Image (cartoon, rainbow, N blue to C red; front, side):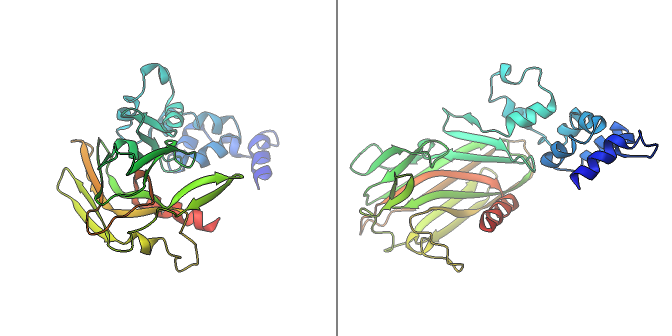
Length: 297
């Protein structure tokens, strides 16, 4: 089909018949407004009119969030000076670091919607300065190249906050955790559960709140979420993304402040053997699509 379209695009005028190459660039640009960035880039290869429309600032302006300038403000001006809107979209679809490189924000390449990840280094962790309780170790399994490891604590509490002009959308906040410590052995992911204990004795409490008064509270035993799911997928020894809840942003101004926490403060028993990587804030239905694609692989 691709070859047929290409022949029609290039040879329509030469053969005296009307082809895709006869469509005005302005009309092609109007159609591109309704397509995704990957679709636009694929069609740009058909002919000159499609290539021109695929580089139109008007087309790519429609793919950028209304407040993309706030993301550009996180970068030095020389990184985007003189860029077309297409190049700006490509730039912002790669992670943009801020807050001492402990937070990242980027555009989803298909929808152009804003996603964010917050490293455990940006969070407040009780007793994290005491190496008897918490350690940090480098790993390429984290987008931040480092994760926190809880060896043993009685009071487990992790909290964080972020202020950002999120565009209007519904967002899901998740914690990315791993039961047990892990390492790479002969290129394979291997888990060690030597220090894993106490999580089956009481639930972990998750909280999410926003500056406009939204609040979500949930509880879950980590021992339960690491068990095999209904489809037989083994979660023990794998990274788990635990959904805390959703919040709604109606407008970008004022800036939304999001606060989140994860606690297990029942001091009648100790707990340990847990890796904490990051917190993600991603448009809700985008997250559902992403999980479906992963399951289909």
